[in-house]
Structure formats: C-alpha cells, structure tokens
Amino acid sequence: MDRITSRTNPRVQRARSLRESKYRKQTGCHFVEGDKLVREALSSGVELETVFVREGYAGPVDFPCEALWVTDGVMDALSTAGTPQSLCAVAKTPDSALPYAFSGTVLLLEDVQDPGNVGTLIRTADALGASCVILSPHSADPFSPKTLRASMGSVYHLPVYVTDIPAALRTLRDQGYTCLCGHLKGSETLPPKSSQMALLVGNEGNGVTDEAAALCYAYRLPMPGRAESLNAAVFGAILLYELMR
Image 1 (cartoon, rainbow, N blue to C red):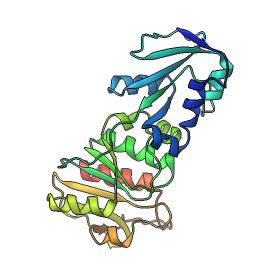
Image 2 (image 1 turned 90 degrees about the horizontal axis):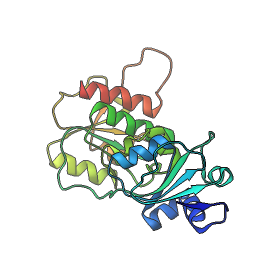
Image 3 (image 1 turned 45 degrees about the vertical axis):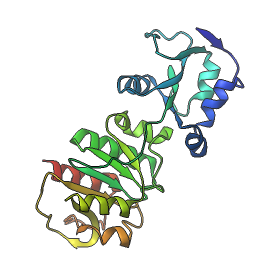
Image 4 (image 1 turned 90 degrees about the vertical axis):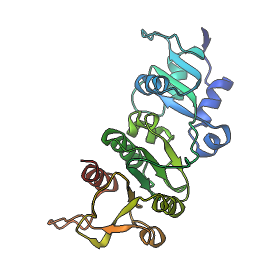
C-alpha cells in the first residue's frame, strides 16, 4: 500500500472536507471513522472509496478499494473523535430517495437537530425492528461524524430517508398507516396498535409542527413526576418499544 505522510495530501484534504454538510451533499460521500464503523459499513454493503490505515495497525487490510497507510500525525488530523483511531474511510452515501410503498413500523424525525439524538434514535429504530427512518431536511445529517458515532453503525442497517415530513405523513396515511406523534396536549391513551404504525418525534425545543401534528394522533406520555417533557431520544425509544412489543 502507498504511504501518506503529509496532512496536505489531496486525499487527506478531501476526507477532511467531508466534515462539512455542503461537501457531503456535493460529493455524495461521507467520512467513516473507527475500526467498528468502517467494518460495519463494509459488512452492510456500503461502497468505500478510500480507507486510511494508521501505521502499525495489526488488523486485516484486505479492503475492496484504495487503502493507504498514514502516519500518526495524518490520522490525528483526519480524526474528529477524542480517542485515537486506527481506521477511517471515505464512503459513498446510500441513496435517500423515498420508496414507492412502506411496510412495518416507521420512525419519522422532524427537525431533530442534535446529532446525538438522531444517531440514538436511528440505533433504537434498528434495535427494535423498525423498517426505516425518515428525517426532515432540517434534522441533523445522519451521515455527519457525530451522528454516525451515536448510531454505532445502525445507519447502515436500515434505510434512512430525508424528505418533507408532512408529505411523508400523507403518503403513510394513504397507505393505511396510523401516524402517532408526541404532543403535550395529546391523549394519554395510545391508539390501537397495528402492523402499520408511524411514530413522529419532533424538535427538541418546539416539538412537532402544527402541520405535522394535524396529520397524527397526538399522544402525551403519562409522567407522574415534575418534568414537563423528556429528551427526544428517550421519548422516541419508549414509544417505539411500546409500538413494537
């Protein structure tokens, strides 16, 4: 394998540019960081463009793409995490176009802006068997470094789509889905469960928009304590569990 010793190498600069959303959109690629996430992407069929391997790495390096040795200094320049990494890669971002028809339980996120919340909710949806996750364009990018780390690779296990949430809710309703959202003025009784349920989680501070709420069954999680609301990821996890069990 070739060896890179300079932080200004064009391949290194291209990989570093993918920290920014505009370059991820322009190139259709994203940056994957860490042994686990790189292996997770590979095993899930994601196409890797380039893999960067820290010198001294003892694991297998038989990647189906360009692989490059890099010095400690170069790997540190590539890394966005607080802990040293041995592998990172430039990967092709999976297609985010909506399917013609949906099946199973669907999770929708409207303007959920914290990458940790978005990644955790994608991971939860994966763990509980949801069929896909739909994000609004103003939600945190599911393929940003922080969201990827929070999802622990789950972003590669199920489809993640980005589209207008009210339009997606209308499509789901037309296909027979019961659409449910969290709302402080909602009922404390869940609607009857079915095999076609869609859960909408809203923005951390403002909740769901009025337009989206009008398309959903509004539900307020009973909370006997003094807190008015829950963290978006915690609320979504509780409700997904209730819908899936």
